[in-house]
Image (tube, rainbow over all chains, first blue to last red; front, side, top):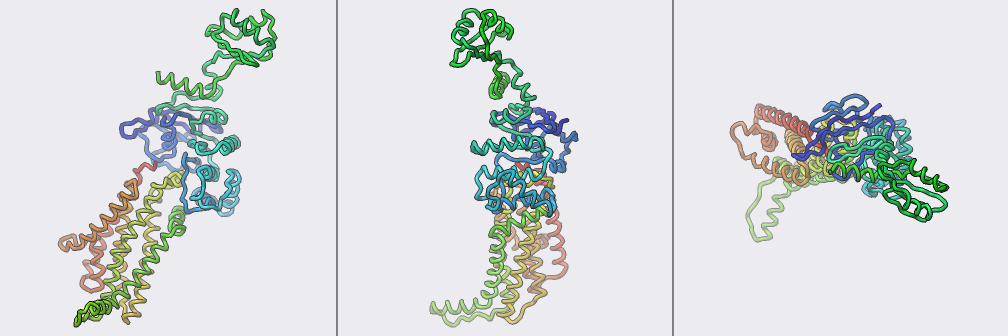
Length: 306
Length: 255
């Protein structure tokens, strides 16, 4: 079931069309990776969902219900972590969480415990320090803690790892994996490795339009790479054999432990097996190389530009 | 709304802004009474030092003290109030706190009301405290103090402050930057002060005339009809400004 659905969303900044008929669907209990290069329209889309401004055309549905222009009740079920979180610097981290708990409507009895829980979960080391003394990474953690306090049905994160050091990034991705069971996550990023490691589905936005959307496995395999890795005992001989006899191979490279080759478009995996069995080569491993999200990203954007 | 009020009160309590208001009110009030009481003595002393003899100044009265009080508040307190109020109205925008607030199901009207209520209350508390201090010092230094008339004059002055707060709120919520908002706020303030010299036609009932009205009430040189019409006209202005502020803020993109 789709939790968030966007249909034909348009947004103009003056004469510049930031969103151009954007359509997107986030299903319940998934991590949806919203990817695209800088300026593609990711943050504009997220701000439109949060009703930080009016959009020019299109409809946003939350839990099956179209959101009216003045609708704000849906925000009770959505938490938002902005790319650069900012809090009043005169407040302590704990004060910010206390205010958030009040905004959320937690009662006095549960408030203290809920705050302590999110402090531990988000690993905020100095909750009693003023926010003005927090690093950007710590502010990011505080923003996540605020979001978790809400126990949202949908957690929207706008490039949450961009300010974090490698350890912080790793921990955050770990946290997202843990949260997968508790909530639906719409995760915007241009760090494709992060998206590939945590997302169930992805949507690729370019110039305000969705150019690719689907299950991460589908996206990675949407175009067969026709690239294979072969591990066998007699590597050098097999390499020569392929060079001389295999007419179905476009390109081949010999490495210390394996061979890498690309098949011609008309060839299939059967041709490889046939050749190998004819010449009695013992195969340890033959596997198709999968594309990385980065490959897909570049490929789709190239297609789109063409 | 309750949480928004708490958030806005913290803006004053956890920063030096509340202290600034209270200290300024105390200082101006005490200074007004002392200046009025001893200005003639100071001037006579200064002239004697310069070799000018024979000029005597009349004994000051409580009216001199009242004039000094409203003069100081109009020139100094109001200016500080504009700076601090604009700062509060624009801080969430300039410091990018909107996502922290509007991620929650918070109505924009409540947001505006909360800011107005908190600023107006802090200003009212400061002025009332200042009036109390002033009343006490005036009574001690002059031996008399007209509580009723002074209270009426202070209430009229506070209505002018409220009018000014709502005006700068409208400007602040419409513009993007602190500097632009505060510049327009200060220009408006000087304009309103300047307009007090316009004493004809319907202008005498416009909100800026509240500044004169406070003094006229203490002098006894105005009538109840003028007071009521000016108050009524001010209320209409307030209502229009409030509606305009809310309308503009509803339309404003938060990012």
